[in-house]
Image (cartoon, rainbow, N blue to C red; front, top):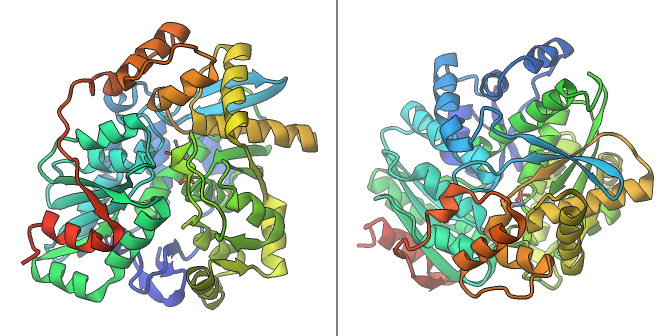
Length: 502
Ligand SMILES: *Cc1c(COP(=O)(O)O)cnc(C)c1O
């Protein structure tokens, strides 16, 4: 299996190289040259397997330059009961909301309590094996721009991993207090965390620029280092996410929620378009999906795009209670455009150049139609997010986080508007305790304490929902990182953190 750049098909790499590099040398994103087929036979075989065994089969179809042994080692090290709380790894919670049946796929039982763990617990294992194959003995420098959850998940995944250094940038006012605390107290000898003055898009743009800057790459090279990425631009981030959609389908069949071979709908709370794209990849392999519902918060650039075919980032940016979706440039949309245009690299590059230059592009009628037939876009504002958390708790005693609430609200509206009663899977992406303040406010708690950990206790006392152990253990941990920088200084900060700033 080879991987091409979305912006230049003549650029080819094996899986190990695609993962080690993170981004294609021309600034495009690596995509698989074709999608392996999920046959009925294979799908029915997967029904009887555990999460880990399903993962090995699916990942093996894509990482053809890894041995079965290597893939098994990666999967077994990543998805343990110790790290994910149960053999299910990603359990399904069946709920009824406003009379509609929803299957919440809980992707947040990993060490940092957000769905990013599903990919970032395994990426370091992929990466160290890839470096061994194609890295020429160099160490990997992982640069991360985070809207909150990726940063912590990547830090936890890469801490003290040999031959890696990890540097995380987050928007100074763009993450929840718990997210900030999780990152600033990170242990490990190979980690560095820094806030930037700006929003997530600023951080992501600057990181991409540093990545592809020839002079910075040369400096790293002379110190026997190379950049890699733990953002969802890295193929090694997306692939593990394909697994849980297929696995969830199997679980839905096994529990009688959908007859084998029949279609499901999938709603995903979306920011950078990575999670939902992984679902599209599962569909492209043959997973029976009728429609993807792309749920946004008030930063509804994707809702407009799906409806109009015009992507326009020139608009107000809102800081919301679902900060991991406060994004106006959804990086992975580039991959979808490439696939839906039949692999038209020049067209894709044209869109990305226009986005960089003018902040706007319009896709061809045929791409617009392809998107419209498979995707539905909807958004939920701050009041709607709060009332959904409140109403879902009221109706089912089930506590969800702010991002999941956006998805539940949009799924609910989709069913109301269309009458489509296809069984609905909803990606639940974070523990409510990562966003205690907003969740408490939604439950009309009238005495919200100031301290983040007191809020966790209050929320627990109010609802009885279990508090994840990794969050409790943060209390009282010393802050290790408090630097704040301007985005124009990020490159210098990187070299200084690596000790190679001359
Ligand atoms: C990252 C994140 C999202 C958005 O996922 P994308 O892959 O960026 O679309 C949604 N919810 C939570 C909790 C997240 O951490």
